[in-house]
Length: 338
Image (cartoon, rainbow, N blue to C red; front, side, top):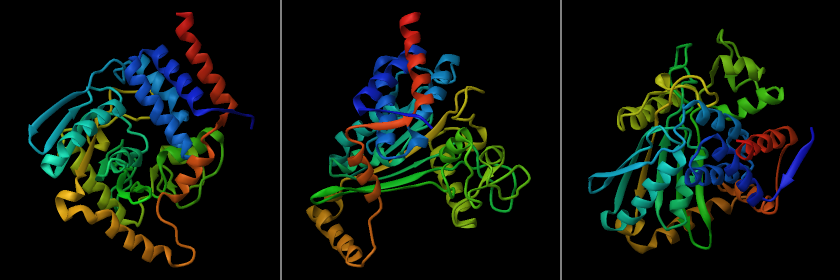
């Protein structure tokens, strides 16, 4: 398959133009484009520029409010409530986490709740931003239904990612990022687009049978990690990100992947902690003792190390399929044609 390699800044500019041409406000377009490029920088193509055509289509049809202005409230000293107003998740999360960064040193711990939101991309990137500023963070997000409750056959729960990050002395933050499915739905989406098979333990078809056909998987359900434990974890995340913050449950949310239905109105929840407020100034040093104990064993690597390696390798250029590049260029050119 033919491909195109461009510097990250050029992809950022192209992505912004695509979004603005679709009707997204420039400030929001910058936020969304930066998140997509960052995903591709880390080798996470399923959450990167491959999402851009669907994002643009959703703005054009009104499923995403491209000009939405996130609303930020402080209903209690330690709680920041953000209404994404049916817009993109990225600018809403940015507003909430910036407010949390300002408040957490006086509060010690701050909860950020985002409602009426959308696909939040690589959840680990949001908590990494906080860890780079010396904070410990835990995040949860719900997504449109893709997993059946344990023992069932119809999707009710989302793939529902969770992420954790903490600062490190002399190293990039430790970032742990996962979803409650065996594989991210976005990876199956890319496989379906490219016509490539998936491992047999990733998903079930509409009849509840394991499948290697990515298109059949998109019509069925995803397998939860660790079986019943993963399904239970998804149930917990739905309660935290939908019931608690007054957002749509996964079974109520429209898909992130197309322009069908109304706004998804999913939710995200972040717990932001000032480690010095909890245990004094020695958190990072204490954490390094644990990391050192792990790394003393041959073959051990910490979560997120591979992403850091890929990020370094893509500093000068990101490669995407030529078909996607040409589609994005054509979409961006509509801004000048209109």
